[in-house]
Length: 114
Length: 113
Image (spheres, chains in turn brown, purple):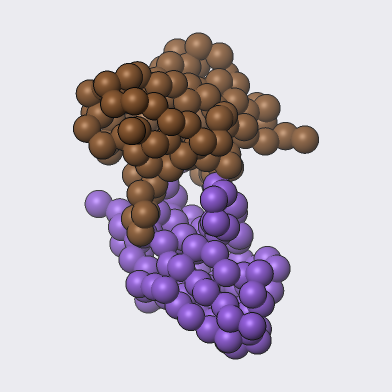
């Protein structure tokens, strides 16, 4: 089955540690995205990538980093510089080549920093 | 810039009640419009979409009509079920091949038996 996988579903880290969230897709999509979701809030875009080896900052990129070395993978690193990292993180992808570009989402990773 | 405004929730209904969740947008040109649904602890799933004015998107008993004159895309369902309890997000994708959607803040729906 085609889709997006995120791992792990729950992640706990101590304050001051970097942590990397995995996102893999087998949909052959060009574009991938990372969002952050906080309780009662909508989605906020962290980073996005339209092609391999290229990515752009979204609205809240500070304290985060990404890489896009392969088309199917777009890992997100939450660094110690992110002041409030506890949140639900969603990865998404889209075809990226047409104007009607609905997004496909992974199941999310809930990060808790202790 | 682009924006999407949804009615604030939670919306609380009894089973078999009629549902409307309002969504209005601001954008230039002719954006594509979407409704996504998020069940507890999960990612978002596309519920329905419309790509041009007067188009009606429909899926699983939900419907929404793209109204250019009122810049709206309200979500409706004639008879809700407990299993429809979720958060619903309205979103737009600008015309011109943009890859970046604009989401509303989401509306929580709670359906009681």
